Image (cartoon, rainbow, N blue to C red; front, side, top):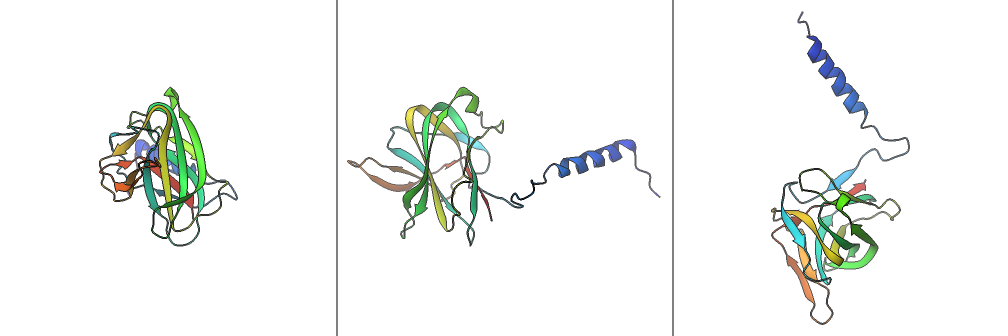
Length: 184
């Protein structure tokens, strides 16, 4: 019979205690889907040259309805942002805004891209979503920027919402660090 040393038993006990902390509250969701198209390695920032430029990420939800929980983004510099969650049109472009959030990014919200700091918006009061959902971010004041990875996901776009010079969705070579969390 092999004897276990005290350090290995202590490690096992720590591991079991750590796993116990992941339980959810009674009545809460038992599963979450964290949807992201970046590789969790920020390589640069998405900045906004004007308040009409919007960075947009397309999220394809799995079949069925999903309860929105949270939206996360990694902020690189301070300023004011507007975050829009859009439904999808028949042509798979951003449709009507389902929710509009305004967020003032302060020094405390900023991340160096490696510290695990995320700006979190609560979405639990939204109705369940299905199909394709779009998340758009644009500045409303200052010079805000969000981190992006160098992944070419095919799900990240930029557009100009200026009515005098509209620009349709253009794919980007970087994917913004935006996460959509839903419960199936």
